[in-house]
Image (cartoon, rainbow, N blue to C red):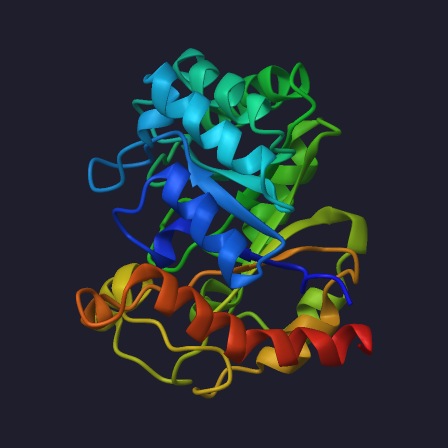
Length: 273
């Protein structure tokens, strides 16, 4: 039996660098991991491997000794002040790790034409590396705050190497449904992430939830199983479950094993293993 088609997402293990993240994901049995190679905000700096060639060589060597892949590059913010040319080092670095997708958000940019121009430039640069850009809509974002808004940007971009990153948390918090997800052409879904949570939450608590207070899949009220079943079967699903209350109580490897034990059975039901 192969490894579950799951990726250990970096937000789950804050402060863990690429080499250790690859090592932990491999030891815990994940099929992939993702890397933060571009900073979408000051609170989420890029991994050292972007500028530190020694760190990059060490991480690449650890990956070569593993059976996993680097799935996705986080995260390109098409905000008003963004310079798309500054995205190039992250794309080049991600290409070295074999990444084939990268996430883009819009936080914030009220000029839709500017968003489309920056998105087009990002897609064109990514295409040179064989990378697909996946738009990730987010709760509390005014600029790209639903699946349908992201889908409209995707279609208006005029690019082929573009899709959607659907995070179950943001699908639920933006009023989306699994039925709406099922209605989308499967080949437009280029990435997915899972966690769990209560059905209702105050807006004041939503930002804290997204950044560090998510629930383990299967322990909340989200339709996790239905969501997984609505995804293309070949998709590797990201496990993005940051819980800041566990920092210092569990080692990163213990945390990764905990999540694998919880999520692997849910994915196995999808693929009939």
